[in-house]
Image (cartoon, rainbow, N blue to C red; front, top):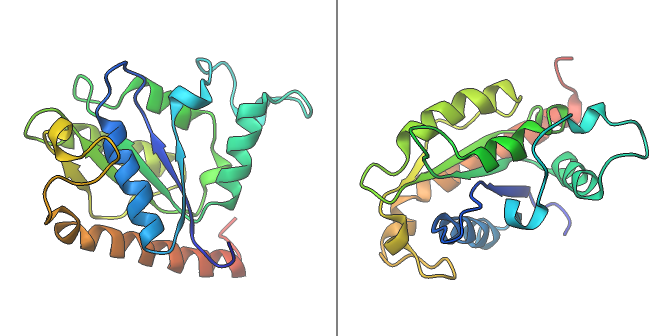
Length: 194
C-alpha cells in the first residue's frame, strides 16, 4: 500500500432502509480512484455498543476487539471522510456513538464532511453541527462540504452517481481534502504542537 493516503470513511446510519450507504460507497470508490486507501467504517458492521467509556479508558488487554481494530485504523489514518445524514437537524446517533469512542487517534488529521438527506437541502444542518464536533475531536474539517440532496435517487446501490456530472461538480472537494491530508501528513512527520 506504500505512500497512499489512508482514509477511513465513517458512515453513520443503522436504519433498515438506509440510503446514505450509497453515498458512503461512492466516497470510498472515489477516494480509491484518486490513489487513497479508503476503508468504510459502517456501524452496522462494527456494532459498537452505546458508549460507556472511551477507547483510552479501557485497561490494557480489556479493549473490545472491534475498538482495537478501529483504533489501529485511525492511528494509520491521514484524514477522515465523515458521511452523515440529517436526523432532526443534527447527526445520526450511530455516527456520534462511533466518533465519541476516540479522541487522540484523530488528532492532527483533517476531516471532510459529506452530508445527505432525502430532501432538497442535502443535510446541511447536520454538516454545520458536525464541523463543531470534529474540531473538538482534533480532526478539523476542510472548508468545502459535499452535500447530497435526494440521496435515494442520487446513486445506484453500488454507489455510482446517477448524474454523470456529479463527480465533476465535486472535484474541488476531493482535491481540497487530499491537499489537506498531504500537508498535515508532512507536518506530523516533523512533530505536533504538543
